[in-house]
Length: 100
Image (cartoon, rainbow, N blue to C red; front, side, top):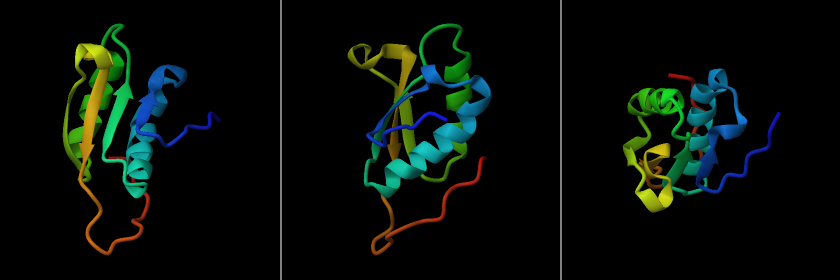
């Protein structure tokens, strides 16, 4: 198992495609718990398969406010910026997500 720092930057190059849906869901949850609302997911350019998987998961997550391809300086179409909704006022912790 790979330990992932919760720092708002998720690089998917180390993971198997079958792990991506659950990983992205859990990582975004962990970022939101830490107050990191702008998250970059690096999926690479390659065939676009990982990008397609990431972009299929994001609209199904109620905690995602918006997402867009990164600017060229941040990875271009090989990365996606995700904006998360802040935790509701007074909320300290939320239950971990279930895979969409």
